[in-house]
Image 1 (spheres, rainbow, N blue to C red):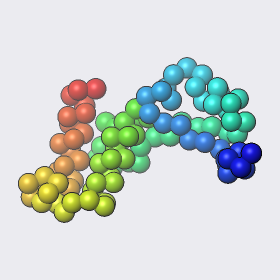
Image 2 (cartoon, rainbow, N blue to C red; image 1 turned 30 degrees about the vertical axis):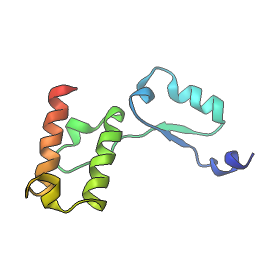
Image 3 (cartoon, rainbow, N blue to C red; image 1 turned 45 degrees about the vertical axis):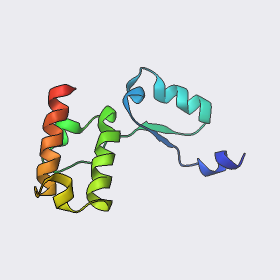
Length: 96
């Protein structure tokens, strides 16, 4: 099919569900392409705290907002973006 021809390089699965035992094996069988578990892109100083697939959506949203969204003032009452990342990472560490 047309979709299968686009997936020849493989699939990256992420999120909490990607941690389920055998998930990447099942995905490989279903899609018949290589599958790997993706991790969030590192943010300086926060790698140990957010380096897990279940944090990839939150990390991606933070990075997207920082790169495409509001100016620094709207992001955190004048706080530098790196300060925002630290506050969010601390919150994630406390609650997850």
